Image 1 (spheres, rainbow, N blue to C red):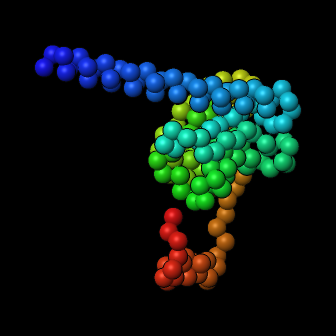
Image 2 (image 1 turned 90 degrees about the horizontal axis):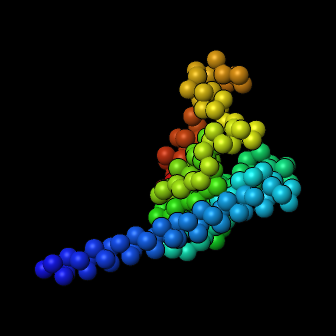
Length: 176
């Protein structure tokens, strides 16, 4: 019995070490993508990789400045790539490796994509020191609409809920 227990412990330890090695490889690849992106002037210093079942299904580096698209953050680009590569908008069972802790927009996209777990290297404080401070956005989200720096005002409309009623009524819709 003791031999079996030692063998099981050895196997579990070996698996854990392999997993740690893979995590390190994926996160370091995301970090290298981010660094390359910065020095090559192709976008901000952010990179992301999405993995499912041990296979890379999506990659992305920040493309905000080159694409002139403020939503082209590394995580969003990687999600778009993974969805294209898997031909699906849900990435259930996948994990994302990001060079930095995701901003509020990317975090939302990760949730919408149904990604299972986030691994990141640098903290948002590290990004803030480099001029990428999203703490303001986190604070804004918690404010009532009328107190935000970009006011949001609901306009009255008799048909405001029409799209949702149509959606509910649809029989062949693709749920998400």
